[in-house]
Amino acid sequence: MEKAIDTCEQSGVAKEMFEKLDMFINSFEIDTNGTRRKGDLIRILHRAQQIFGYLPEEVQIHVARKLNVHHSEVSGVISFYNYFTTEPRGKHNISVCMGTACFVKGADKILEEFEKELGIKAGQVTEDMEFSINIVRCIGACGLAPVVTIGEKVFGRLKPGGDVKKILDQYRSEVAE
Image (cartoon, rainbow, N blue to C red; front, side, top):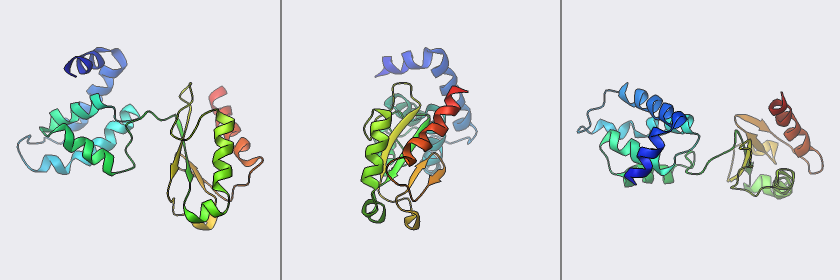
């Protein structure tokens, strides 16, 4: 594993990303033998995911070493909170709510349309890294069912047969510009 980290850190873009993460971690002036370091872990993982887009094992090990904690503690936090991901996501992450209200109102059909339009299944990312699809249990907007979020934007009361294509066309036009 040491070799993978060295290789990753030596590549240009990755090196800059690790440096940015290190600057953030160093700003906490953490005592690596103190108990506070564990309290900062979630905040550090949030920043790491913002920087890298996801939390691959190399990043997890790097954070663990910087905080002087076991890798298992870092991966345990990542697996507990579903905000964190160890898989790459697209620039536009599509979350399809499959909570009861959304499912009853046809969220499964909306998901099928996204999958068909993008040529990927839930849990995957498009080849160009522009879009990814994931399923969530509840977005908390049941009155707008079925609901989809893309990034921070909420799309509600979606209907099969056109809404999905219109939404994707908005994001595709951004890519083309």
